Length: 298
Image 1 (cartoon, helix red, strand yellow):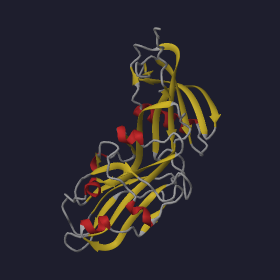
Image 2 (tube, helix red, strand yellow):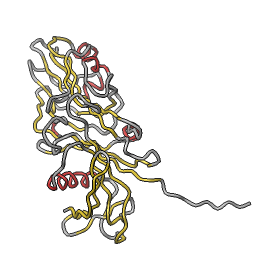
Image 3 (tube, one colour):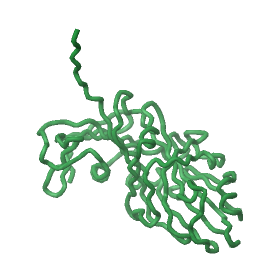
Image 4 (tube, one colour):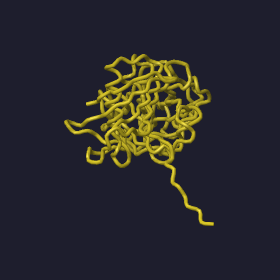
């Protein structure tokens, strides 16, 4: 349960002061669980209803790392900031969308290293995938996804302590076998559009522990906790971009079971889906570095 104490408009979104409860017990926020009231900034161009705010807060609280039970709560203590960011819909910065190589009949290594020939930044959903052709051990399509977030509202002096990137999906396929979906770096040529040339603009360093296709939560969010490399990708001065690829794609090694015209994929929504309840989101926990007084002996 969420108890909203105050909401106000801030540049680019809304700020909510709230308490949270698990059952009849209050959640203590902060690394030591002493925070009674947390500050949540939600950056979105969409107008959020009270219901949408509560639904978003429930998920945000669920993925927050700095929280505990009620044993250490100091009544009235306010926490640092939990900021939530969404990509922009359509051909706008920071863009999200897909890029693919399709309509071919190639070996795995060839399709992976080939040039993109299809892309979109206005679709509601289209996920990372591998599609087999009708020719034994060859493939017809490979898809990759990119997602941008404007995290510049995070104060440059703040320390980013944790972050979670989440994707809402409603279906998956494992016709070629199960494999992880990995979060990696994406560096689009344009921050406001996805182009076919972006097929080659995906990294191979994993920004989080991979999650298997069969472990994706259809009908709800699948959450990736960013590791040190992922946290380092969060900009406090502009946009940052993350990609989704299959593990096979990242490793350049198909270890599934080939079957004619079979498909393995997940199907996350993009920011173009109506509302924000299914949009990709990046939840960042951050705050000012604590001041530690120093005694100088002369």
